[in-house]
Amino acid sequence: MTQHPTLHAVDVRCASCGNEFTVRSSAESIAVDVCSNCHPAYTGLERSVAGGSRVARFNARRALATR
Image (cartoon, rainbow, N blue to C red):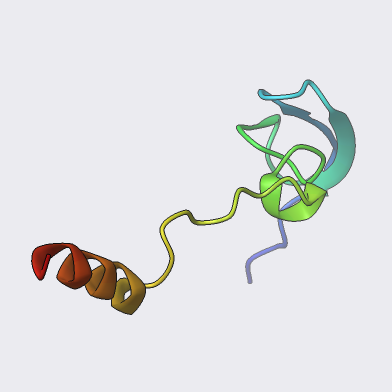
């Protein structure tokens, strides 16, 4: 019969903002590139997609071509 892995408190460090927090994990250490503290989708700093929809861009190119 197999045993469950041993869980222990691990400090996680974000490489982007330097934020540190503690989680329980079977890994010895965890390093992440982006955390919830600095990720654009969580902070509200997400950039909007410029240029509109494909249909709007097509219609703009079509209008320029008919001049």
